[in-house]
Image 1: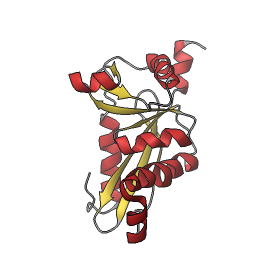
Image 2: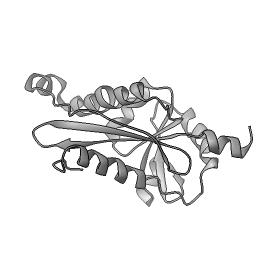
Image 3: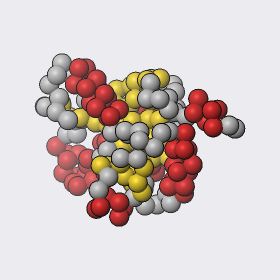
Image 4: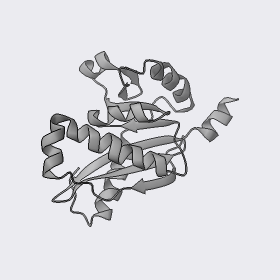
Length: 172
């Protein structure tokens, strides 16, 4: 496969969730090509755990809701499957246990974040600790992207689309 073939076929997923007051969390998945052009967008209805779930799940509730209920659902119903899924919330790292695609948390590149991941352009990518091969797979797949790509920008688009879907009542 040539570099041009890889670029045409590389699909990137940008998965995030926002909190909707009194309604819970609403998730969104934007799948793009290597140029950042949308191929598909999916979103969930708000998911609000009940009080019993809050008590029983305790500190594991948010990772469960974000990763298993929202993230896994969005990726399963996506018609265009991403090769790489990017996230910005540590609670979504658990999603890696439920998907086959590489998963990386995107954070602003600084000295502290560089200790936990690897630099790519203007950001640091952090992978799930139990999936060590993701780093080498990511480094290989990301050669199709420009070095100065901004992997945080698509999250702004997803969050804005989610706010539009809630009538502007949601918080990032």
